[in-house]
Length: 399
Image (cartoon, rainbow, N blue to C red; front, side, top):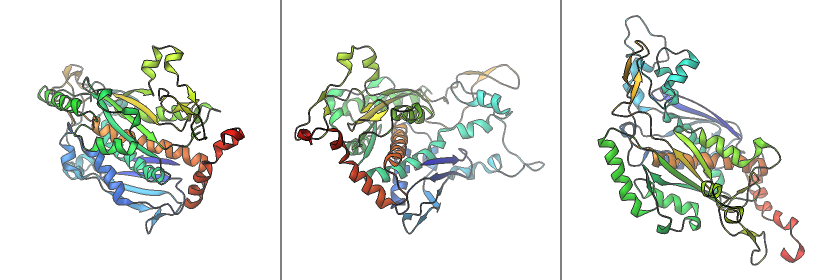
């Protein structure tokens, strides 16, 4: 499975080509739209979300609700494009046509300056349009398709905000490791900040209002969980097949994500092996042994263990501040306030949704590598048969 995306933030549309789905898989388009709508919600969002209403148009690869086995072609229109007119038109500019002032003052922390140097762009808009987090519409769309594949085999993915602007959730408020991923989604969607701790939620909302008044932005930490995974997705045999590495590459490529913690990695790095590792215990009633805890995050040796997979992403504050930071005017070389673009005060609730979609995509891709087939019913049969696989390595007394 693979995908390729296109589109600029204020261009006509975002587009996605997705390849590798089996033929005959049901595709629920209203559910895709519901996932795109989840990405647009949350406290701290800017004016753009009041304009857009993301809805997918499926142009190829599906007939009568079932995939054909050929590539999917999907687009999501940018409603804000109508407000940009000639500034974002694809056609050459005619004499006397107004296209807006070029952007010449880069924002600290954004792709503006290195992108302009790399591609030789005099107008930073030629960089910032694609570097915008609007691009994550495509990633959410790919992940929303992947969620439908995973949920058909009882794998669920959910994400929530763990910390926002220095306000952390309390583990005492809810049983973190015991929540099914589907319940994580329900609770996160019920919170304006996608937080599962009601005590921390109020403080997070107050922190957003404070940053808004100060013309500032906020980052934080998002946690993603996946339950119901079969054992052995990914592989230990080569570096680029390791599931932890693949998840890391996908998640660290998200805008503003600067760190990734697989399982309880930060605490483990300051612990001894006896404190950090999960003992393996017999499972009552037979079957594979289970881990006594979840400190490894459901990953060992680059493979899923069958336990809850969990990880945390660390997001920096967004680069567009209403009170601009110091920068340089590239025309004059003089100090100037950084360019302002319509932006959010905090996008952590949106990141939680997008991160869940990105994880879903990587898990679905790994699942199809292990159990994939050209026809959907064969995929389902192979996953069902895999439930018998653990018995092959266990002694007769344990089977």
